Length: 180
Image 1: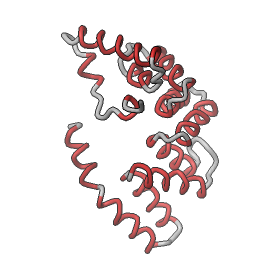
Image 2 (image 1 turned 180 degrees about the vertical axis):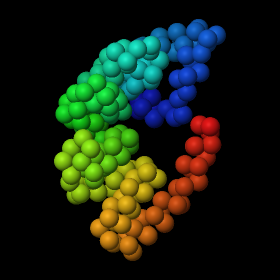
Image 3 (image 1 turned 120 degrees about the vertical axis):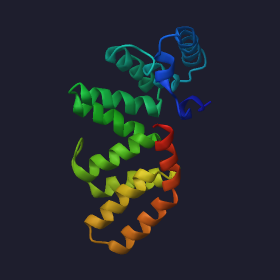
Image 4 (image 1 turned 90 degrees about the horizontal axis):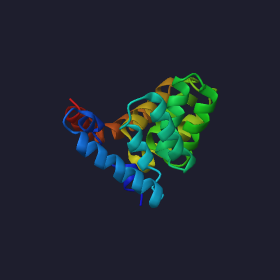
C-alpha cells in the first residue's frame, strides 16, 4: 500500500510509443486491477498519464481524487484550473496538499505567497513550504521559503534556508540530467 503513489520516475512516454502497445495494455489492465480490486486509488494517477485525451485524463484523476488519493486530487485540481474551473480546482489542490502530496504543497505555497489561485496568505504559504521541507526535503520548497525571507528582508534566515537547499541541490541536478 502506498507504493503506487510514490512510483518515481514514471516514464509514460515510453509506454505510449509505437511498438509498446502490448506493454501499455498490460500496464493499464494491472493498474485498473490495483485500483478496483485493492482500492489503490493512486493507480488512477498513473492511468491518467496513459490515456489519449484530456477528458479521459480528467476522468481518471477524478476517480482517484474521490477515492482520496492526494496525488490524484492535485492532478484533478490542476486540470480543473486549466479548463477554467479555478475555484473548484484550487479546492482539490489544497485538499491534496493537506493530505500529503508534495507537488500540492508547492503549488499551495506558491499560490498563497503570490495570490495565483488563492488570496495572499503568508502564514499558509510558510505552512505548506515547511511541510514540504519537513516531509520531503523539497528543494523547491526550500528555495521558495527562502524567497519569502528575502521579500521580508530577513536575510539571515534566507541565507540559512538557501544553505539547506544547496544540500539537496545535487539530487535535483541529477534528476534534471536524467530527464534530459
